[in-house]
Amino acid sequence: MERLSSNKAHGGVQGVYRHASAVTGTAMTFSAFVPEHEPGARLPVLWYLSGLTCTHANVTEKGEYRAACAKHCVILIAPDTSPRGPGVPDDEAYDFGQGAGFYLDATQEPWSTHFRMRAYIEQELPALIGAEFPADMTRQGITGHSMGGHGALTIGLRNPDRFRSVSAFSPIVAPSQVPWGQKALAGYLGRNEAGWREYDAVALIEEGARLPELLIDTGTSDPFLEKELRPDLLATACGKAGIALTQRLQPGYDHSYYFVSTFLGDHIAWHAERLKA
Image (cartoon, rainbow, N blue to C red; front, side, top):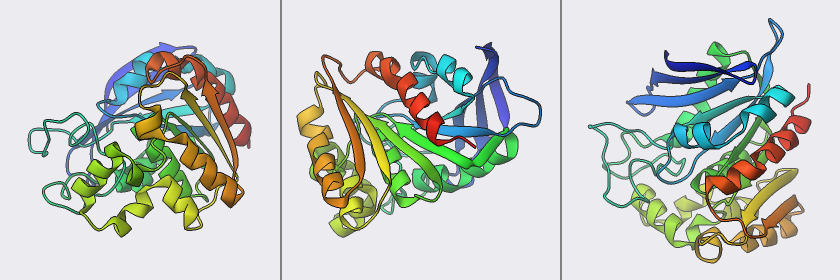
């Protein structure tokens, strides 16, 4: 693991790191904020998954999360959204290819060699974090924004024993039913829609996946609200499944980091309460 940068912030350390990933076959970059803590202490971990076109840098530079992480003594890990590099296939569109990994393991060529973000987030990167940082891997939460909200929900639903808490900002809750998701799932996984369901939060809930509770924030002025995000579908699925859903429609907020940064501290406090030792 190579440290690319390290800065003191709110008493802790904000670092950016790069490592060779066996899963993606590329170098991968992530950021980690580790708050000030007692020597030998192991801290809870909150994963933050970013959205389309983003890297680790978007939330690191715009998320305004470090004060809350320092207050609640929570490590925040922000991975990249896809493999990258000259040997990695790409697409001219912003919503497919590099920067748009959708937190799945692709099965279709040419994507299947490198686009394995599910295995990277669920297996490889957690092992690295547990080995290299003062992280208590028995206390993990996950959140994310937009495409990353989709990732947080689906990874959380598939791994309920790993995550004590799951939340999201403006998530794509039913990618099988909206244009962003249909394009990505068909391109990465092929046209057999039965294989899409393990990457669709609403479908996972319909098929029996359960979490005790969810926290979701979406802005009422989000331009993608009705066509791509469809929070109503998640509300219906959770209602039928008996999942305690706190779904807040925040008046006047859009899809940007002005919105995310406003409420990310609330989410960190919510996760911290559920990640207590």
